[in-house]
Every structure is written in C-alpha cells, then in structure tokens.
Length: 186
Image (tube, rainbow, N blue to C red):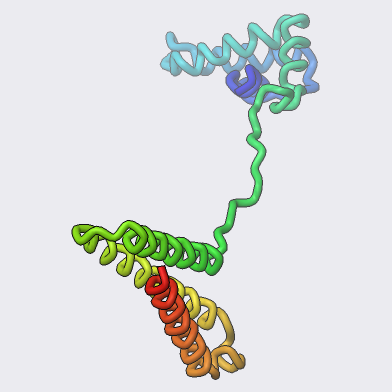
C-alpha cells in the first residue's frame, strides 16, 4: 500500500474541498475544534484527527507535499500484479491411450523376459505380465468408451457402438494370438 492510502483524507476530516483557501481551512478547523474538544465533552480521537489534519493543511509546504502524494496513482511500480496464463488442460483421451499402450508394452516385456529366461520359479512374473497386459486392455476399452461418450447421441459413432466393440475385441484377440505365436517360436 502506498503512503497516501494509509493516511486519512485530511480534507474529508475537516469537511473542506481540496481547493479551499487557507482561511477557510483555519475557520473550519476552529469551529470543529471548539465542537469536539475533550474539555467540552467531545471525542479525544476525533480531536486528534482534526489536529493532524490542520497540522498538514494549515502549513503551505506540508499541504503541497500532501496534495502531491494524493495525486500519485496508487500503482506506480509499488503494487505487484502477477502475470497469469491460461490453465493447462489435460487431454483425457490421449492420456488414457498412452496409459493403455504403456501397460500393454510393459506386460509384453515381462512375458518376453520370462519366456527368454525361462526358469520355473518365474511364473509369478509371467502372471504379473498377463495382469498388466489385461489392465492395458481394460484402459484401452475405457478410452474407447470415453471417446464414444464425447459425441452427440445422434452421431454415427454413438449409434455403431456394436461395430466398435466388435472391432476392438477382434484387435485384442488378434494381438493375443500374435503374442502367443511370438512366445512359442522363441
């Protein structure tokens, strides 16, 4: 906050205009001081604010300095305004597809690792590979359903869900058969 924002408005305290003459300020101060003096039952805090206002506005040099601080804009290099940019948005479909691809790839690597270095006690690793691949297939199916839900109900992609499901499960079955062929030839 600037100094001008912290100080009270002395013109408002005395009830005069900013262009008021020195005589008008003095006359107004004397009338308010007589009215609000603590010896006459007035408020002590109000009297202190009247004295502070008259101390500034009654002296020409102080008044000029006070007027200069009042006329300065509030944000002359003192107020920090943070720069902002639009929020990042996530591509939900791309993220789901990437997760499905990573799970499928990771499961395939685990299965190949077990097959190439086949030792009987590595069967839990093979089961883990199958489970990770199954999770990848489930994620891919969820991505397909998410993409389908993004279309209007009358869109062709929503009306041909059966064809999409048939194609998806055909690709999954073909991929599993290809993986079986690869694992048996090694």
